[in-house]
Length: 162
Picture 1 (cartoon, rainbow, N blue to C red):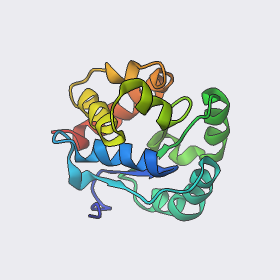
Picture 2: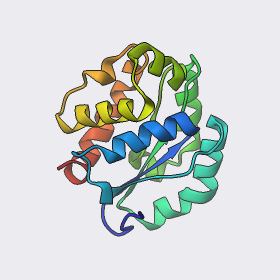
Picture 3: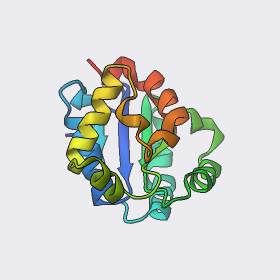
Picture 4: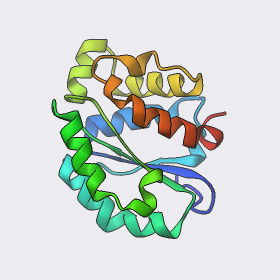
């Protein structure tokens, strides 16, 4: 289902299938307004996330001021380096509406550490956001997201959660 481009909404661009499955679990959580979130097709690599964002979604970010976007990627053990690189690629005029999140290593490691399926991980993350807590988000493989997560929740909570 597509979102209404003229109302506040969130697009999620996942790097790969595990990230897409987590995003799907998040979007399908009962607390989440499914009409305000759309999980896009996986990009096929973290560099491709950035390239696809710039080529396919940057114009829409400027055209639709109610659009927010999550770039969901693996950080492959280098979260700060990767975040810095991606941040340099996001133009200043839309930087406040773009969020870069992901597992500090790979989703497979989080799945194994939590003994949850990818969609279950996404649902747990959505429940945390809806309840204004960060229990699951504070897992060792996710806690590096805290500053970005706080910014995201503050921005999307009014339209994304019931």
